[in-house]
Image (cartoon, rainbow, N blue to C red; front, side, top):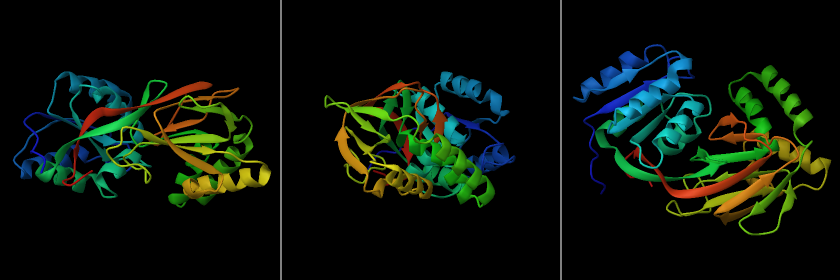
Length: 291
């Protein structure tokens, strides 16, 4: 059994305007800390001050940094906590919540916070870097990244918006193929490549010091359309056009900037992206029994 972590100095950064966080996040979180005999410094600023709040909170060297916000803020906090920073608890407060759901399951941030404060365990977490930008769950490069906004609109029941986003994605999706090199292997053409960390990979041991790559290769318009539908439905991993391998490093290149999603956030990385993996990226406060 893992030793209980030190929780004497806790900093919280929350975005009241994000997803399911809500305007009462400061009062709700203070009530949870109070019931458990703990205290925390809480910063819940306007969205344009979140990065400043994160940096200031980390500079105070807390035992734990709790983040209750969207995917972009969770990943930004992970980048700032990586390689020697404080223990992190990225709680679900956004739309996709890729990292929070992978660690805490699909439950409200209030339940996850109370759980880890009472029985949480410190765990190391491996992660990838795409041109220096961190991801702890998955990186999607290429066509499927363009379908994610349509999929999220469909999940929220906004079918008109989902259709508009799907049309926009289809108009852009296959106009520039990737050239992908896995480890020291040959370069090959592909529609897209996705890199999964051990946190969610079904093919790797959770403690594996490597990541899993899924390379999409299609031979014509029919397969390309099917790949787009699988991406929209969220089950692209099972598409027959996907080849999956374990690896340490990859390079993806294209004739134009590559559409990219890191842990649910769309980012701009350019037309050449180097992807690597590090087994000890950061420390998280996870639920008891997490592996």
